[in-house]
Image (cartoon, rainbow, N blue to C red; front, side, top):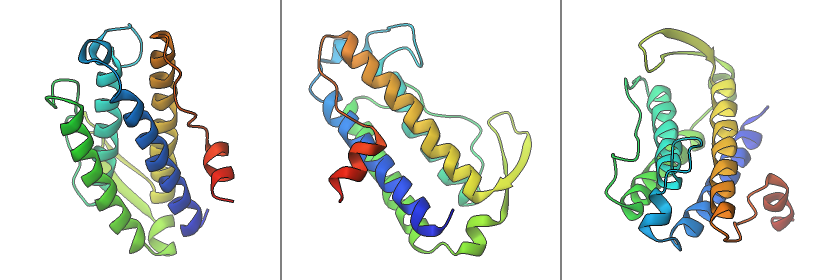
Amino acid sequence: MNLNDIRQLFDYTDHANHLVLDAAETLTDEQLRQDVKISHGSIFGTLAHMAGAEWVWLSRWQGVSPAEIWNDKTFADLAALRARWQQIETERKALLDNLTMDALHAELSYRNLKGEAFSLPLVVQMQHVVNHATLHRGQVVGMIRQLGIAPPAVDLLFYLLARK
């Protein structure tokens, strides 16, 4: 995987995350916070977890390993969550814009939330973040569908076709 590939995957991730956030903004607070007993309880909880995971990994890539992740209590509302998520996207884009192929494929050490030490190539960590976001977006789409609302199409294929 090269730099253009990883940048495209994160561009897709940001695009699809925005679609899900846009859909979430049409919901009532009750719908956002309804515990549907999957993932991180609610749409809001799952979105907070998604943003938190992106923050944790970005922090690791910047040399800091957080000891906790965000949850549904971290943000007062969806607007606050979205604003913080935008900051993560901006910081990650700056990191990607300055990344070299050597750094992309180099081993990068970090500590998980329990403080245990690990080391993986940065590219593998980045692929994990994209995959993690895809998993949880799918859960949010399913939760939106359970509310009887048509969810956005967030598949990678739709993103790629729209850019042709």
